[in-house]
Image (cartoon, rainbow, N blue to C red; front, side, top):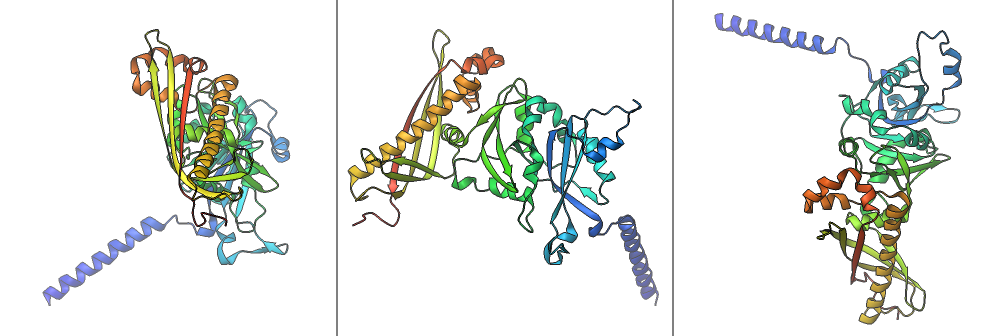
Length: 405
């Protein structure tokens, strides 16, 4: 009996402890319907809403500069899944956007609590988009300082620059779609195109802003609820501000120079006949070699190699079994890649006068002493260096069709 009593006491104590732990962990619980999950944020030049303008203080006790309009995108749990509510004959949006204006990003996040009853959770934040006007006028290191310090933001957050207003990229007309998730899904298409940059996460952005080197952020444009990735924004390493844009073809040139392509296509035209030939990239690699001569003159050689498939041609008969035909097709593709590389080099060196293709990084690795002497004015030095490039294209396959006859 004594043994049974001891077992009974032990079981009672164990259940009591478990109950206390349960109560201690759940006393402040909130139902999921009371929560929201912030998944996207947009930062634009300040445009106070009519409501904000009406209630702005004019007595000077609280000074607020309307520098930034902060837009928060929340996923609304009760509006997602099978239980979507019907509003006005259609489905309720699976997200809500809340905009507030001020001068402190952290305070603006808290200001959203005055407009929305849901408690936002930040660990699900996926994207932050910076509007064009704001990026041109505000030092990005100051603008996004709060994100680097916050324990609530994951390092995997993706960063973009919008052409136009950033908040417009967080809208959609498609039922059930969440715009922030859509942007992430577009970036995940990088293996099939050379027009998408490798993702710039919070960690990578911090490293880039910490130095004086210029860099790129993926550009996104929105119109009437549709969004598209359209090249890259050039961020000046000295000012930390938007300098200008590279278009989609310019970005292709950058990808070829850096050898960072996972896939994609090159379209060109066959010699003499001017008929279409299309090359599917199966592999791509690039090697940049820096040279410094006795007069401390810097130059670079870029060796680009790619193998791929002749995936489409409009040449008649266009017999892929004929080696001469394949050689001419390779020349046509090579000519197009040379054009892409040449054009973006001219834009970097002559128009923007910045290095956003990694030449400085190669110089630092291969000639560290020289780099230490010129790193402070690298963009200026880069504008005058000679860059030679050699491109090798090899068609290794023609897929399912060799001859049209």
